[in-house]
Amino acid sequence: MNIHINGQAYPLAHETKITISSALTLYFIEPQQSTFAVALNGDFVSKEDYDRTFVKNGDSLDVLLPIQGG
Amino acid sequence: MSLNIYGQNLDSRLLIGSALYPSPQIMKQAILASGSQVVTLSLKRQNPSEQAGQQIWRYLQDIVTQTNGYLLPNTAGCKTAAEAVTLAKMSREIFQTDWLKLEVIGDDYNLQPDPIELINAAEQLINAGFKVLPYCTDDLVLCQRLYDLGCQVIMPWASPIGTGKGLMNPYNLETIRLRLPEATLILDAGIGKPSDACLAMEMGYDGVLLNSAVALADNPVLMAEAFSQALQAGEQGYVAGIMEQRQTAHPSTPTLGTPFWHQS
Image (cartoon, rainbow over all chains, first blue to last red; front, side):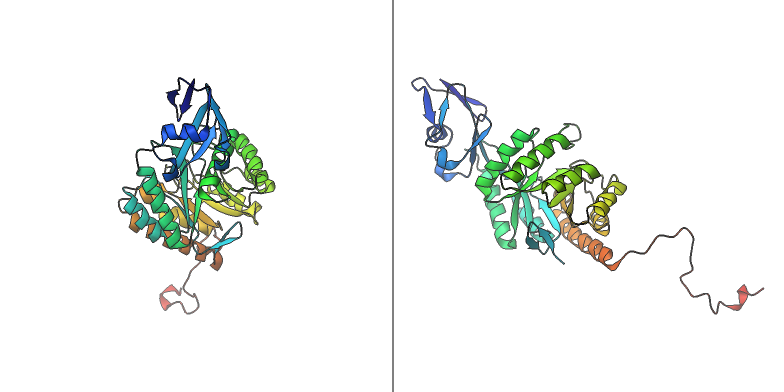
């Protein structure tokens, strides 16, 4: 399957779905070291739901970090 | 005289942005020099291997700790209510605050807020427990609707974001102040120079939110101090009661005892 994280494609040959927790390990070296929040297909997913929410083929994950703003 | 935002009393009436400074160090110095206790920030996609975002985040946490202040996350870049609501929920989880500077942009050229999407988003967010500070145009009826929805703080623009053009339409802004006497009004965006902020405070506005005017100054730290003083001067002028304008000249010096050369 193919998923997108922040617009970048991540092809996964052997899975049909993975948890958000697993998907984050594709993106971060150490997710627990970072401050971020997640949306799946445009909907917010809270941290407590990362282990029980699945990312499937064609899904898009947004992982946002703090940045300066006006 | 303190600024009240959703029940929190703040010593400074200046809210300040954290973007566009020459360096994180100057950002921190300028924000501290401004005396502001409310700092805006945002969320964006970033490459996690680049530590720039994490560094800024640590600076901002440090500033808020030093000032006993508050973070005000924004929804910059959102064009629909749905996007703004999602981003707001993500911000609340990270920053642990219900405060939200709600931005929903309707036009890419002048970054003008979309009033329809703004109202829609504000209603959803208030129902979800957010304390919404909407960035909006200087339209009286829009401000009234936002206030009626439950936005205790309303933030009309002075002029488009980052233009530094100052108060484009003082009449509109004065009318909003007159018609919404109970609302906390903060002038947001387009401020260019300290006298712009002073003018807003002389109108009876409760505060000013700015970023570019300080960050893009030749000396941001000095400009931050200048804005702090300008807000105080404007507030004191408003409280002191500004004289009525008159159409004709009136002598300041007493006319009684005018010297002899006026006798004829």
